[in-house]
Amino acid sequence: MDTNEFAVLKLFVVGILVNAWMMRGLSAADSFNIEPTPPRPRKACNESRLKWEVEVCGEEFKRDMGHIDPHYWCNLTHFISEYHLFTICTETKSHMVSCYWPNPLVESYIIRIHKHFFSNCTMDQVVWVDPPDDTLTLLILIPVFLTLAMIALVVWCSKRSDILA
Image 1 (tube, rainbow, N blue to C red):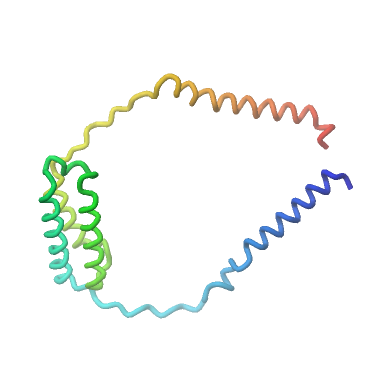
Image 2 (image 1 turned 120 degrees about the horizontal axis):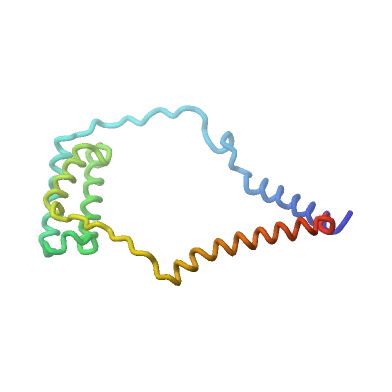
């Protein structure tokens, strides 16, 4: 047996062994219970309490936003932590009263908050600018040269097929 063929055979066997080792324990029949699990009893969503709890979150957010200059309300970097706390608060309160999150009640409240604080925040049209000529040249030439190199490699290998076989 030729040394190259033997090396390919060893690589193939090692590949099979590594694949078998990695797939060990990933069988669905071995790792999952296929019997249906009974659904957990879930309490009904208390929407009236949720509305009150979300109002508490909103008041905290309004108080926190009061400390930020209204000129910066359209710049997310100035109030991201306050908005994050507001989001976490609404999610926590929803789960506390056995409601899923987000739900229509919370979404409508968040929309009201957005209309109150962020209604004047309009996005300016993004003006797309071409990259500098050096960057553009590189972005064009790299794929062209890679394509030419691959074609040359295929032609070179096809001419040497008698040696490689």
